Image (tube, rainbow over all chains, first blue to last red; front, side, top):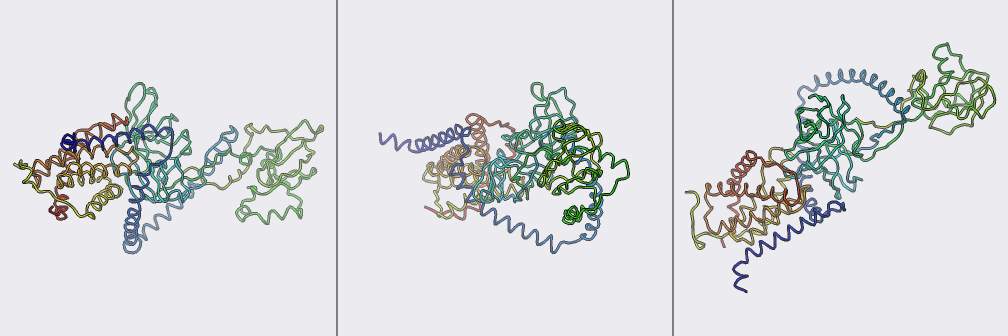
Length: 407
Length: 172
């Protein structure tokens, strides 16, 4: 017996080690569906490797910054001039886009759409990779201590990058969108066709689940659809590069990611998303007086002592643009004998039947500040249904509450 | 003839300082994780595999070779997002085979090393893909030109790396 063991010692040890690893592999495969726990070996491996990666990145980034920020400044003046011109052009674009966005919000509010907004992001630096062609993951230098959690979206200014897969103490593992186990809800920008974005084993990104009878052209932009509940809707994903017939009845659509996934340096982790319905303030049910005020010369208000105070508190921006009502400003009690000021907050009828003939009970529709008691207005005003498209949009849509919209 | 058949007594068995035993695999694992981030084309290399082959053919002890390969592979798996054990199993087998081969043949010259590393790189890929597809059900496509090119590049790098690591060998 001993001679057999001695003779086949190597093979026996090999078999034992292999069996142990196969068992370990089997346990992992079985457990991936019902637990999110991280194996200790992963924590050890990541904890021992990432500090060195952080140091090397710091040295590498520091020397690079020193060279680029202090020594290599050739052409900076010319670049500065170009950037200033670009800023002017972008400002003009921004004005137009703000108008479009305001219009979109009004329409969304009319349809009671809910929308996700990125309200908080955390910048992080990519410090390493998984080191394997089969697993497309990167490590970032922010972790549990910074408030990161699994399944948080990771983006750059160019487009989406991936999602947080595992979170360690001071580092996190990010699954890139070109990994074959990733999946992102995506939508084609022009044709509005929705599909699932997946990575392939070759590191390419494909859009799946789009039927062959749909016309898709190379060059079309792909954006997030928000259907995966990880990425908010509307973030750039990439561009269609090739369209072919795939398996079954679906197209094979190759997508070039908008973010350069092979050269990631700084990323943003979306740590907080808010879901909200555009408020009525943004759409503003229209009062008859507002419509009249737009068409006729307005009657100036009688200056009231208490009405002046909120105006003093209003920001300087609003003073320059008096047509825009302040979000925090509530309507002073309107006087029944005076035409309501079109610049004050909009009023929504709450119950036309509850008042007597020729009088409508109104209350301010603003979401900000305390709502004053309903008041009676002598003028009969046609009640405007809250979900009905107004005949004429408000003269000036109030800026939405401060938030970072999807980029 | 690059590979010469020798008897067990003729081949030399080497050992390594514990610092080298731990430091070289750790450095290889670190570089494997860090270099592809800086230079994406470095993902073609498998430095932990080269280290496994080097220690295996130098020590010429199958148990030592398979344990070294297994440990390096498991550690490498831990850095990826894939199940732990894929590289572990592949490198265990490669470590065992390389050390067994090292007992029988002399792999001290460049030609032998190039050929041995080339063969083991391809073998490693085959084992890895078999386990990944057969056990873990990962979707992977075998691309012969890519795998052969990757094995060839690894073999070239391996030859230079083995010569650099030779200076740390200690005679038993």
